[in-house]
Structures are given as structure tokens and as C-alpha cells.
Image (cartoon, rainbow, N blue to C red; front, side, top):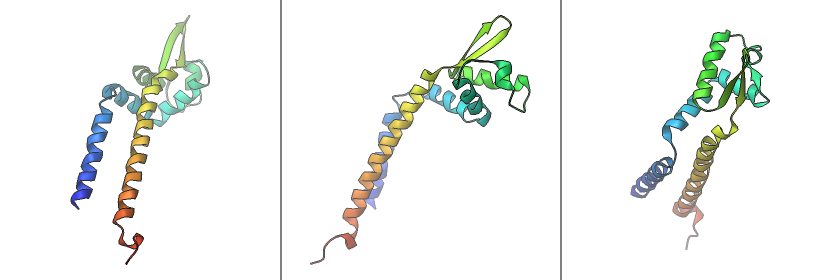
Length: 134
């Protein structure tokens, strides 16, 4: 049991060290913006090409002010840019904003794959049925 507790403590310590490489507030803002299905759908639409706010709002069963609030959240997270074109606001995606989140996710995927492989080796070594009997 002591080995398992040490093993788990080792995992937690490595996770804390890995997480400190990233700007936590920026990641929180990006993941919070992506947590809403409407914002993800907006991001998907805008990802196909620059659109006006009215074009973005067209397929959604919510008001234009609600769409504008969603756009502000996405803009604060750095996921989109908007620019004024005469009387129209044009919105485009900022793909680079997802780079840090993607790197964070990939790092945790690699971390957990390593930890599970280590756990598999530990369990195989401690399983009496997998060892030869004399």
C-alpha cells in the first residue's frame, strides 16, 4: 500500500510541475469559452471563413444581443478577432489562440500514457499469477 501512495504522490507532483509551465488564467479563459455549445458552434462557423455578426447569428434560435455576448466571450479568450467594415462587424477565427490549449492537452495525454504504462508494469510485477512458481 505504501508503494501505491508514493506512486500516486509522484503523479500529483509531476502534474503540478507540468501545469506551472502554462498561463493558468489564459487557459481557464479559453476552456471556459469553449465550454458552451453555442460558442463552439460559432467558432466552427467562423472557422470556415470570415463572417458578419448577422451571418453568424442566422442559424441560431437566440437573439442578436445573445450572439454578441457569446462573441465577446470568444474575443476575450482570444479565439476570434472582429473588425469594423463600414457598418458591419466582421469576425474571423484566431487559430493561434488554441495552440497553448492544444499543447496543454497533448502534454497531459503524454503524461497519463506514461503513468498508465508505469502502473501496468507495476501491476504485472506484483501479480503472483504472472510469475513462475518453483
